[in-house]
Length: 76
Length: 443
Ligand code: SF4
Ligand code: SF4
Image (spheres, helix red, strand yellow):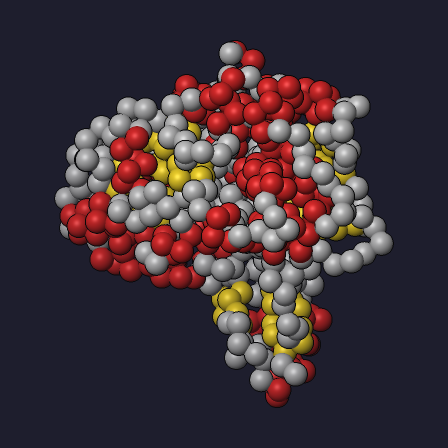
């Protein structure tokens, strides 16, 4: 089982707490919005990733266990 | 003929009706626009006379139809190019019956093909929608026409009314009028508007989860895609029980909208796989094309050396492009590709739905860098900043609007490399201020 960190860009308001709480996984772009890679969260960081998700004022962060994603169209 | 002339919303749309009748049909069987060429009429009687009535929808026909769509290799004609058969089979079995949404929003300013198709041959699109709706067990069809296209919507409503009380409307059908913005036709924005009256793209980390409308699945298909389904259904009905993939895939056509430095811009129906240069030739280019923007404003610039590429998903994919919505914007030697790119990028920045930071801030920043380069005031540092920003913004929006901009700008830096060198060295060409060819809506 592997976990991935996703950020809902429609909810995130660039407070940047996540980058402070989790500098190993989250960087900030030049406008202050978080940048995360798509790679799995290492087991030793999962607890802190979940903590960062709880502290996000916009509830924009999700730590999801990876599921098999069925293919589907994404745009019209 | 005035009743069927598309409302002029873009330069391309203005001329499209005139050229729609001058297309190159694939010989033999009925094609997307052949019904219009045959009669010049858009009513149900003319439609049935040319294409025949809806094939019988009972028994195993829905299954055979999906098999025919798959065998023909049909991909969505709205932009994403997703295989239509997979989409038709993607719905989970639920107790609530789905809605089939026909996407005729066509927010792409350089595209007019859905507009032309739906105004000239509304019944072909309605046929496909009825067939797809029956195939997925939908309880209703909703045709979405942008709120700034009253004439088009009225034409569709008339066509639907003609079908009431006939056997040609097995699934109840209505017309909806979402706001006509660039991202308004993004499928989650469309369904979001139908559901809550709020037409912005949704963040969907799990792309496999279907969109929902009234607590039932919603399936969105482009208008041209539906017309293809209507044609394939006739062939599946005429063929023996199993469709022959080769016969179904042969001689298929597709709609393209050609604009830019051509004497006869408009919508053309061309055989799938026609080389881009040949399509441009049909629209009478004003001098040899320097480059062509393929797919849409979120597509790719192809330089003169790549214009022999056949217009098909696989062949374009090999050169890093995609058919997208069938848009071809021709750049001649009188305009500056970098300046055109900057104008498109600025327009696209303004069309952000304003939800996601990387899109809201990143796209204007990208447009700023392009403006500096075009003006000859950006050197190597600005070029580096631009490529960095392209990489930074890609993949970080809720929808793929920013990704399209990144693709288009990156392809421009490649296709116009020589120009870029001159501009970056502070020697912009004179063209950048003179002529513009890309059909942008008035600001
Ligand atoms: S803490 Fe939440 S709102 Fe703040 S930058 Fe991170 S994801 Fe965005
Ligand atoms: S990526 Fe841009 S256009 Fe897409 S939802 Fe976010 S802000 Fe809107």
